[in-house]
Length: 425
Ligand code: HAM
Image 1 (tube, rainbow, N blue to C red):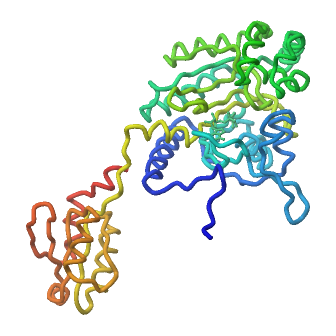
Image 2 (image 1 turned 60 degrees about the vertical axis):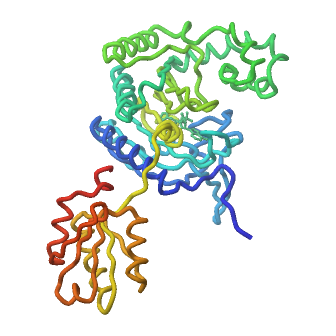
Image 3 (image 1 turned 90 degrees about the vertical axis):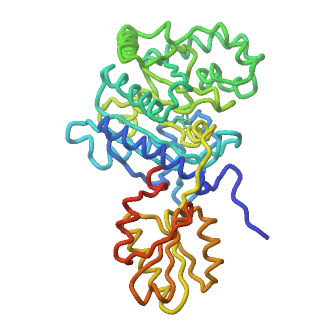
């Protein structure tokens, strides 16, 4: 019986992976220009890292992590997100010891055992940026400019909406949680089963619940924004005015709470109308207390992660994938022709010309059919005579013309013609 892939896991086939490369290429360049350097982190970490960072009472930690005991009896987890690992790496590698500043980015798979649907997978990929060491509002604005420029460079900025909010400081949040709990307590019975529990453990999440009952019950709830302290209020005003000056459009959404517990002050989501229910294509915010929570010094930090699958969904619309086509196809027939063809293909590839061939002893006609099917512009024909004389017959498959040239010269001739596939990248 055929073994199939797991639910919520996907193969990314060549036509689609061209789009992935395009997005990753743009992202890496935007990150680099903004001063971010790449961090490659393990996929597997000690479970405690995520429990402590993301929060015990969050959906991710409560029910979505792929956690198991490894052979040595240690509880390990496939990373559900990148921030916790980035902070661990920042601390463990002593990046905080120089000047406590670092700008890091990562690209890679994350794992959450959620119910799969459009744009929601159990293995998904994030492009993430984490910025350590700057408490100022300028850092928040700069990170949001980066995020905006990334989507703008991909031609997606007209299709997204940036929503921002502030969660204030720890004190603001604690006071707000009490106010919110007092507001929700009398309507506990109207809430969904999950939210009834959340009133006790994590009432902020009630604001985020998709159930219409919960939305109605919490519609008039006080907002955190209205009750943040002076410093946090000023910080938010500054972030907003810097964004205005940078002409990054945004909306303030005072009901926005995030599904991870480590945030404070500025939080944000980039939403798209093209994605259905899973409409956040990127999200992030400040997490000034997390480095300390994980045993380090007090280093302010902030970051975001964008969901690659969701970006691909947005870009794929009206953007038919084009299969890579070789510029040349080698057709070989007769003694020593295979050897000559392999050699010539290699010379062409090294010169940057995409060239393909068959390896079998098939008829001339069958190989010409393959050349046409592959979409090549030239057939490079190596018969016994050409091989003996060190030549190759170059047939232009569009024009039907043919000329014989020296094998040594063909790479430079074709390189000058340009390969359509390499131009696309
Ligand atoms: P998050 O909101 O959990 O934040 O995820 C960020 C983005 O990852 C989402 O907006 C979405 O595009 C994508 N994503 C999340 N879950 C899935 C899924 N199951 N399937 C497909 N895409 C998904 C974080 O992960 C934070 N670590 C972001 C951050 C970085 N905050 C500060 N620094």
